[in-house]
Image (cartoon, rainbow, N blue to C red; front, side, top):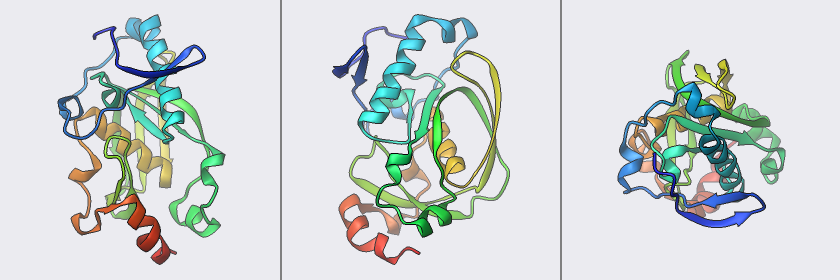
Length: 200
């Protein structure tokens, strides 16, 4: 891993990292796993802190290390209550969406506990300005290490399960555009103007 990173700006002690867009080779690589020793290193702990601030600055609900140029089995996730502004109660219920505290997921293995039959629109910080409908499993189980190198098992449903699938796909070199319903691909502007009005 290269210690030199592309940065955009700093925010306190944290650094806002450059987010790589679709077309960059790092987004199509199988990321390598991290050892417990590496997880405890200042290099990885700093990367986690910087990814957290980069995700919040974007803003987004998840960010994988390949998106900031590091081909590592590491992703951060957080869905803050303030992101729910402008989202109807009906949409929150439909998506089974509730706040998710910040956490890191390292070296994950994911098990789909239901068929990939739930379709919802997704966006991605590495495919800026676009969205598409993507079928995902409603429920998943993820076995991983946390930011402290401790083993963790996550069982998730609904929106959280979708985020986990999306972010772990990044660690396998896969983007949502590989799974999307191609006729649903739209700009964010047209999604807000046309598609979202038709949703429950």
